[in-house]
Image 1 (cartoon, rainbow, N blue to C red):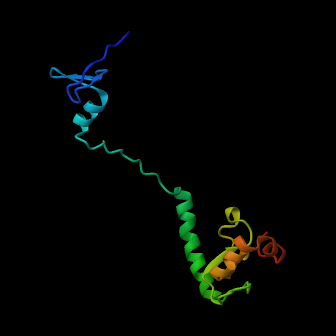
Image 2: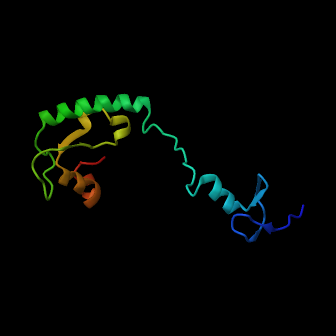
Image 3: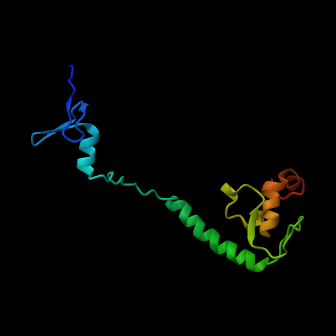
Length: 132
């Protein structure tokens, strides 16, 4: 079906008519301007749960274990270049997945040493037994 261009009552230009409203003809742009009154419609964002219920339960248990572990081990156990002395992080020597709550795979370390292990020199950290 061939559609003919007609004069839009909103912009007075020859356009394809999108909406015929109460005897007035509007192109798509003008109709959206009238419909939304120069304000685009609000897009409703669906809220997603950041983690599963199972992970949330594990995180609560981890927080309690972590707090107790750092109280028992207040000093950095890594003593790497740039060490700050006081422990602020729990480092998992093994991957966190299945060892997330396994305290025997943890060491208490400072943020500087933690950065060194993961970002500065992971190869040396592996040789030192800080990463498995």
